[in-house]
Length: 138
Image (cartoon, rainbow, N blue to C red; front, side, top):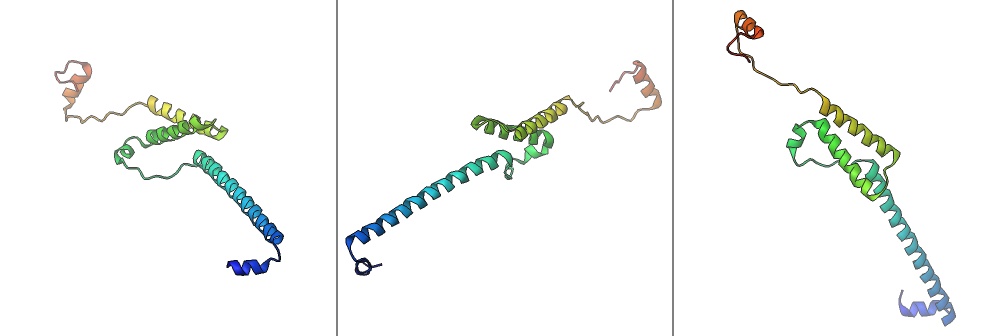
């Protein structure tokens, strides 16, 4: 709006001042609402990051080749540790931590399987190995 049209719109300075004050109040109210919405968005993002894991591409593929259960548990426990630095864990987060910890404990207590390539032995050699009299015990 040009200055001439604005000057024609208002009869005197008091009307122009009232219009200006109303515009100023509107701008202040809108700024407050915008600030509140920004704070709400930040708060919701924090809640979302704490409860829903983000899907990220794994850069080191060798980690996935290792024991997947252990890797996932350790990553999730690390995420919970980061969240606990900022705030207290929720009940659901505590339950997830407990589950991951139990899985890691079970994995640590699992018997390890060892693959051994057996030599082809005759029955006589096998009996000798079992009885402890054989020369080559593998």
